[in-house]
Amino acid sequence: MKKLILFAAAGVCFLTGPGPLAGGQPLTLQVSPPMSVAPAFVSVRALVEASDDNRALEIIAQSADFFRSSHIDLNGRNAPPLSVFNYPNLPPGLYDVTAILVGTGGKRATATRLVRVIPSAGSGQ
Image (cartoon, rainbow, N blue to C red):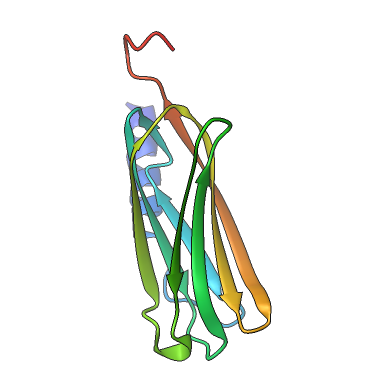
């Protein structure tokens, strides 16, 4: 029972995430769920602090056997602060999910989270 309560509390904290971005934090990355069964559906939320310098956001989900990336252009301070990327059907593996915020002078910030996708029961993996 204690484990269930602890797991539920951790889930609430993870899903609610941090509050509004504070100065000096140009990029925040949230990934949900942090562990799933294959084929997994993973949602990535990138929060970008408003800046005239913001030009692009790239998200990379990579394991030893799999690679997927997404790229969007940002219109500086006018870009929406939240970008959501969904990655369906991820196969089993340990994934580095990385967000890269690009400005006019190159890379402004990066953030990385780990995601574990475990084989489904009876998959033989």
